[in-house]
Image (cartoon, rainbow, N blue to C red; front, side):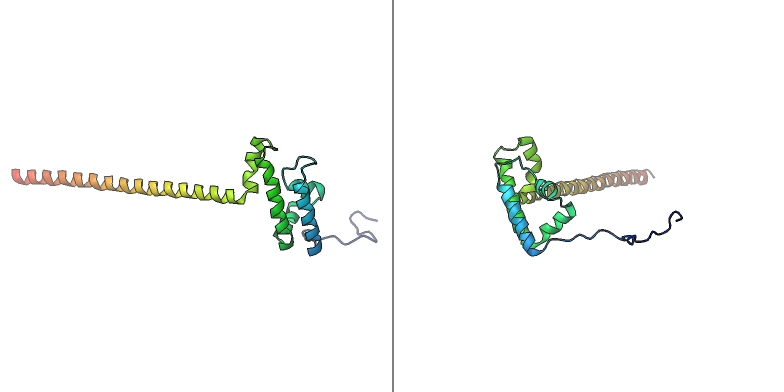
Length: 162
């Protein structure tokens, strides 16, 4: 048979991206319960990130995980598991330098608070920059007035001479 010729009994080529299928509602609930139990268990290996559960234990991709987290049947369990893991970041069971990196991940209210503070600082900086910009414009106007006064004096002096 020539190279490249279709073989008998060969399956048709698959076209397009692989389909991502989210588990059914009942399975999502069971997975959610399992996730929460896993996150609350402190007797096993050190658990510091939910991806240990969804990637290593179940082999879910990040995309599949994100789809599961969007489902109301799973979301409540996900939120509870996140809080359970977050407790380890403040009870010193995870090294402080690592815990510091994960605080924003597990504490959404901290994220909001820090983001609000950064926005306030940004707004104040913008306001200050605008004020300085206006001050610069006033300095230019002031200098222009001084220059025009000098010009008026020169013209008066020139007229007086002659």
